[in-house]
Image (cartoon, rainbow, N blue to C red; front, side, top):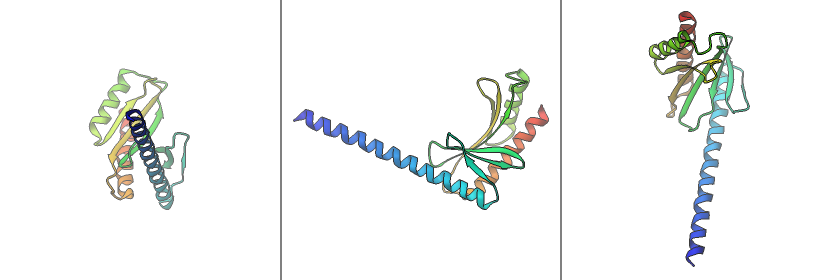
Length: 151
């Protein structure tokens, strides 16, 4: 009897976890679709990549809204090729300076030293997406320009 109860309890817990994780993915899918629809209304043309990230152009440059792990998380990223400089002290110092000077932005070099990344992360907290996107684009775009200036 104990084994049957233990087995049923275990199955219930596992099935509950599976259902909650599916709901979570579903909610994130809806959120990303909402981001895409809002971008289209604002005149941006976005497309989803294989990771589920939303790529769009702003001022002629590619930006990505990264698929979040949690529905209250918002991440905007900009990448550029860093193959020539690699992990030089100069580029590491630029990444540190950009991170220090741009509130909410983080600049870093990927582990293979080939890409320089600028990322802005904030919590969504039911705020207006237009407001979040506008602030994120201003910060990431400023960080991008600052990186070029320091280079």
